[in-house]
Image (spheres, protein in one colour):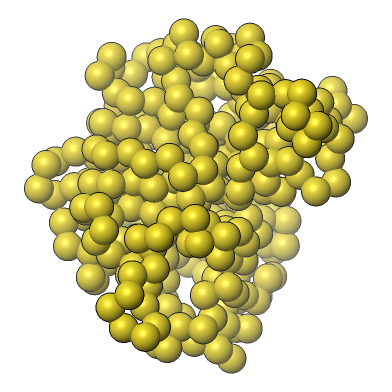
Length: 306
Ligand code: HKS
Ligand code: ZN
Ligand code: ZN
């Protein structure tokens, strides 16, 4: 399979519009060696140039499509390589890009869990608004471990795993999480048997999550924060990373420790990286620590063949 990183940043992107932290100010001034990034989304297809699945619809989707010519093929006067969209949660940075796809000539095939569907029909009624345009053909993602396929994308099999993270702030059950608020996804190429585990928002590595990670050839998971108190120390929030559903990389029980327990053959990568995270600075000791641990930091327009 072929994976295109459309966007590698967390909500707000990098640099973030209102931020003057050392990363954001430094990348703007050219004094920090770091690449700007758009909000997180990936596109997965069985082969280069084939139609595929969009995982999350970032508000930056139009810029992301423009940067990747094969996402907009020229077979008809209006055309797209996006055969369907699969949502991992109902957060703004992962769902409001659906508005940008409203010019479709037919309802957009959309896979999401029931709680995400409810949040996007009520709390942030993206799907109701889209109903005035192309509308969606909603397909339910089950949480029972069953696999599904996206019509038009032969050779990719998908399986969801419920995760501990957080529903969006506009969800009626924001403070009482339910299974399906956040999911991870195993994408398997049925020809080669090779698989990706994708989870851009991941608050806790429960046993089933570790099993899914250990069973994949590539894990691409939550890279939001380096430290649990990153936003607090910068004076930007009163909540820790874990409070808002993101497992930090460093420290006891952090993502680096978990990834060290994966098989040596597993490729390891981080996505959904917040603008405040020191790993964005390619010259930082934190970035060097990841490199030493064999963990990659994704960036926009990166292509991975698996
Ligand atoms: C900043 C943001 C931080 C950020 C936080 C979260 C918060 C929110 C919620 C997130 C994200 C970026 N960029 N979505 O101020 O630096 O409370 O659920 O998901 O993408 S979590
Ligand atoms: Zn986010
Ligand atoms: Zn910043």
